[in-house]
Amino acid sequence: MAKKREYISWFLDEIPILKDKGIIQDDTASALTEHYRSNLAALPTPRNIFSLVIGILGVVITVAGAILFLNYNWDMFPKSVRIALASIPLLLGAITAYLTISKDKTQVWREGSAIMTSAGAMTLIAVLSQIYHTGDELYEFMFLISLLSLPLIYIFNSIGLATLYIFFSFFVIERAIPWWNAFLIVLILPYLFYHLRKNSSFGEWSYLLALLAAISLFFGSSVEVYGAFTIILICSIFIVNGVELMQSNVSSRKNLWLIPPFAMQVVVLAIGSSTEELFSCRWHKDAAELWTFAIVNGVLFLGYMLLFFRKRITFEKVAGVLLIMLTAIPMLCDDMECREWIKIGFNIYMAAYGIALIRNGIKSRTLLLFNGGTVTVGVLTACRFFDSDIGLLARSLGLMVLGIGFLLANRFFIKFSKGKETEQ
Image (cartoon, rainbow, N blue to C red; front, side, top):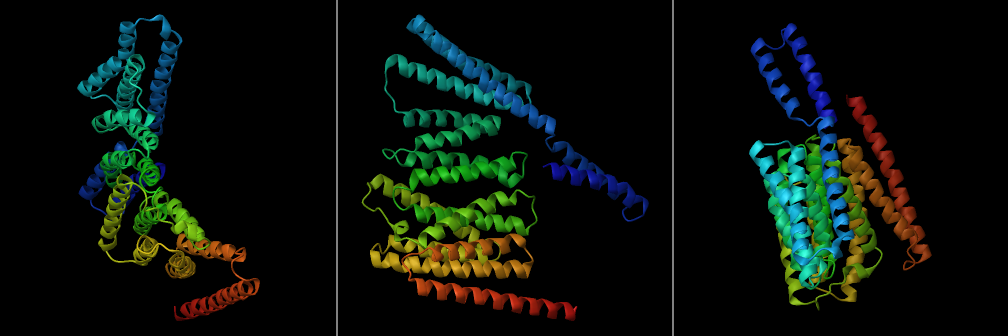
């Protein structure tokens, strides 16, 4: 965001120079100046961001102090007083929320109103549960609080409460009710998509929240059945988006989409190329877990196919489809012999994928793709070097062939580059 402000300021300084040189006319200069000044004014300043963070911290610390005070004197109060005291944070939150909406207050007020109202509801529910001994489990309590907090996120556009909401979703991961976690993640996705597509001031943080939501969804809906397939699906979705952002020269936040999921994908490939245990499908789980797994992964696969046919079909999209299909085989053929063949397939895929990334990186002069291919091939080489299932002689011959192949490729690349320079 700071770079964007710097670029706009630089361009505003250049407009009078362009006008003086006759490159642009007066009306064009005025229109450009007005347009970019309005864009500059819409960007959050460091002072506003600092004020927002301090405001959120102030609300959280104040609420925490009030909770500790009530906890210290709790046994002294009768039941009616306890309920009245527990209602005060919710009442204060409601008053603050009314003032924020009616007076159209700043984002600091909006964040404070959302968090204070949600914390007030949490306090009141916790106190009533303690007084009347309802005995709810933690995941039930967090699920209820999350549902009550959701409208406040949308009403006040609260990125702080959205962060807490996704954090709460981890506490809802419970095998007794497997679909609750996925349900919460689905409800917050429109908020995240809005900020991602609108390129708002919360865009970069929304990218991080999307990654965190994906992790929560994985642990909540798939890890108990067949987690490898879900990881590959999620990583493929993020990688395709990251590559598209990188190629469209959007701001540096593109790497938030690309690098973490690519690293996770390489880790899964390394594990799958080394052990068959990664491809174990636990179909004996109960019906609720299987339905949750099927629906979540079906929606994720549908989302990936929409990305696949959007715009042009690229190498990254094809590579993602091939890896998804390879990882899906154990859901149809879950036996040891099948897993052995899939492990071999992971080795072949990893080598071909890494070499193709290196080639594409050199061809497009994109260092990120080149480094990704190098890392992929390097990880595969390291895994096979220490692989005790392969004989020492076979490992040595394989690594020598691979090394000679890279040396020859390097020679041809240098020769090709010299030929191109001569032609130019």
